[in-house]
Length: 367
Image (cartoon, rainbow, N blue to C red; front, side, top):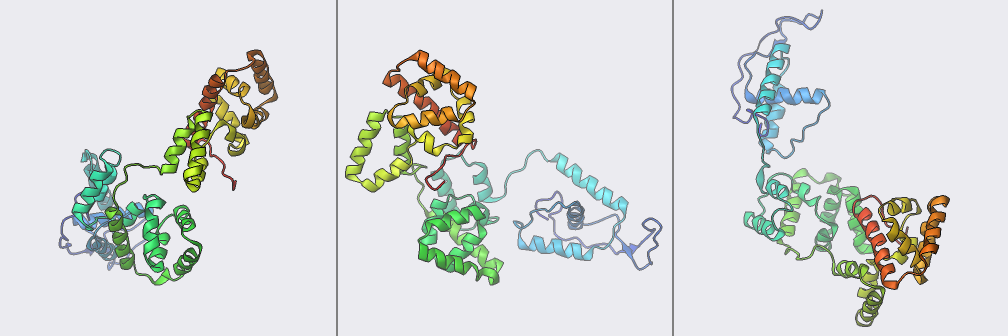
């Protein structure tokens, strides 16, 4: 069996089965019940290990093994009947010795190697390696497809038949499948959803071929120079720009491409957005990440549209802390606009970092 120590050789001829010599507890077995001899083939030993792990409710992922190997394992487990405790212990000890002797293991096949090197080699290099290898993927192509961003899968769902799309969505995790379905136009999304009801009779071989085809199409997509969309990149830049610069750029974008400007606005998060996009329960997490002086300056300098965010922050902390901050704001007096913007940027940065770390989640209009 590939992947387990010393059990990948071809099937050895099993010795003749003896007779049971002894019983379990006080139970006597008829002489026709066989006991496995001490000398087992490597494949028989693999079956013993799998059986022991299964009895402990440990399910091994063997689906990526070649079909002949999986068939051989099933055949071994069918032929084996009973083995004595001494033989079982000897097999386990040999298996553990083999595991302890392994210094390091490497993933099998190109995909395993590229997954291991993800973030180390460039996406362009990875794409070239996949193209050179063609579609001869080892392992399960769906494991790789499951890690692909929905945006990269969307062009495939737009061109493939609804039946193939139904198989693709069925193989993905529910959350990712739902995200993809929401990106498909309404009428086509309904047809794909209905086609899922017809996938019960699809054979595993067909699903595997579809997976290989989808993986091949992903490989043919040219690598992108930028991971984020243009609207996200512009929004990120404007997040840390001064208010006057931000307003001027958005005004110019409105004149040239109003739709693009609206998408950019969705990716902008400023101090004024705190009141509508931060959950009240997360305010305590935010203020812990901001220096006291910066927080006081940001609250004192929050005017106009930012006033609502100032009151939102103060109303979602303890009364004693809010009163203390108000007193410090009064003592500070007026704050220069430039200093206020720097302080408010510090608060926004803290919120963005908490969101990136998964500590908080920004609300949307629907929320």
